Image (cartoon, rainbow, N blue to C red; front, side):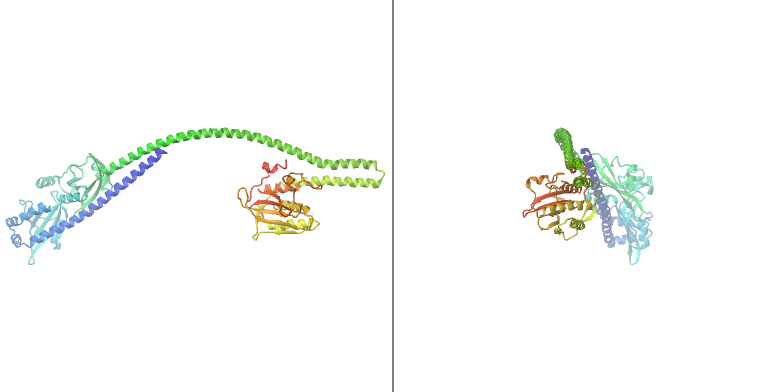
Length: 576
């Protein structure tokens, strides 16, 4: 994880560094492009001002009208030297109306040739000043301005002034703190003319450094060895490159170089020194990596000690769980023994419940045999035998009803309908016609329950309430919203309250034990059935005496349906 985080950090830092580096180069390239345009416009305006000043000089005008080379050189020569020294003007021509050169101030020995470059051609065709970058036959890349000179409506000739590109890139280098290379395509000039121009104008160009481009001007003392033809092709395609130059790292990009006709004749190579940025990035990454490794080593050490403690705690927990498992197994055995004991108790109770009437049946049958001669006595004995058999039959029916409670089929059920149907059945069964009051919430309550089992449980509670009520007091059935006191789960309390004497405190904890009863005619299965029904629905049964007399039994049912719990051990404890 530490290696992954470090890798992600290095990758992110590298990505951000590349973004910053590329953005800085884009800004510088855009600045170079804009500054080139501004410099060209500014220098063009300066040269235009110089030519307008010269054209106002009557001596120069007279010498030019006579095409007097000597007089022109005497008058204009000092001015040209000042312009070349102070303003980097490198070319000044006087051309006749036929574009034949009269005087080159920068090279007085050459004259009489036809000047038919684009700028001079445009100036003659359009009759106005024309300017732009032009590549001369000798490899000179110059910003030229050509102005027609008219006097009294007559054309005297053309003045041409120029500034070589070298001075322009020097100013950009000083303004933006970047290096520039100016290259022109080799297919636009001949090698012999190029070499002659280099010697004639004492320039330091380089023809052989690149395969397709000749180096015209540069602001860097030497060309990086890594800058080769392959790198140039990538730059020409619009990409960028990072090359090492001795103790520097340079980020390269390329700008197109177009002449006055709009054709691409070469390129500017922009070189931004990113050594400080690269070093800062490497230092930051290295420092962060070392710091992360130190922190990671410390963290791993802490993890080692923490995991050692966790391992010891886990071992203790494992031993404890093993002991708990052994205790749980023993507890299950004890529970099984208790269930078997409870089963034996129940079987003994059932045997006791059946044995008493059966003993009476046997004794009465023996008496009936001896009293066979007395029909009246025999009929009395047979009636007693029949009554004892009916008691056994009632006990067996109660047992069968108890066993049927395990059947469970829940569905959404209106609790109001269940209560109404149970009360109706109770009134048809109970002979004293005790009043029953029903208390329901304002909104209908629908629970997912087994309506048959709920009616059966509620009927048992009503019968118990009727048997406990000695006067004419009303039995109250209520349905109230009440959360589970143990876990706060939402649920409803179905209660039955009577006005009897209440339950004696000493037997309150025995009332849900199967076969426990305080009535001579009771089976002791009514309340266990109620408890079993509540457990099947995920609820419980509570019982308590009222402060004003009487007993309140309540079945709590969950609002959300739960799986039946007839297969859980706790719900079968009283059956066993």
